[in-house]
Length: 247
Ligand code: URA
Image 1 (cartoon, rainbow, N blue to C red):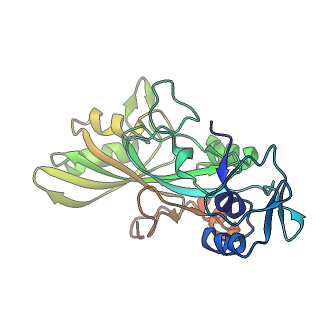
Image 2 (cartoon, rainbow, N blue to C red):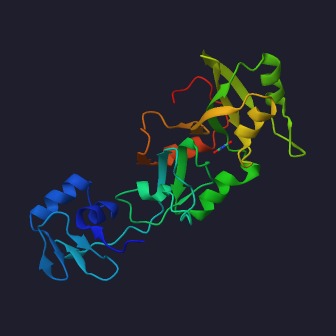
Image 3 (cartoon, rainbow, N blue to C red):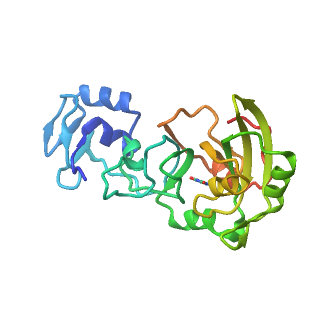
């Protein structure tokens, strides 16, 4: 991993100010690196080896817990490194210097809501089966599954010898031989949604996770992230199955 970072990005990631404001602060000559005033934009710094002061005071990465909601694009892996050199989700967190890790996974070809944090306890709570955190997906599938098939998926079907837990499904659009279905599940088995639709003979063409609990992506564009507030974190654990909410 690269050890240096642009000064304005470092300052923003430490929570000093927004990236733009950090640039202004640098231009005003308020920042020194190893005792030298730096006003050149884009100066690379290594915060682990260099002393960075703002108005004479040390600037350090905030060690508080951070919670981020990312709209993961397709083609990104949710591991922290990839032997095959594919892009990793944390590379999208520009401006955040804390080491965050993804809570659970999303397949390479699945896009959408992914929480990242450095709070191991909360990550475990979200993933622990006892909390039954619901995850809602929009799946575009081949063909038009019958109501009976959708009901079967709702009740649970055998996948690799184990019945899936009850799910909630709603078919909300049909277009040129495909159907768009909103599905809410609380299990996190590998490629579960794809396997469920495969099992009823309607393979998934496109899959996007739109919510954890009632925490929705809303207006977050693909590849973008936002920091979560304590209010947002509460929404993750709300079990009411969201069917009508915004994406
Ligand atoms: N189900 C899937 O099939 N893939 C995902 O990435 C998440 C849930």
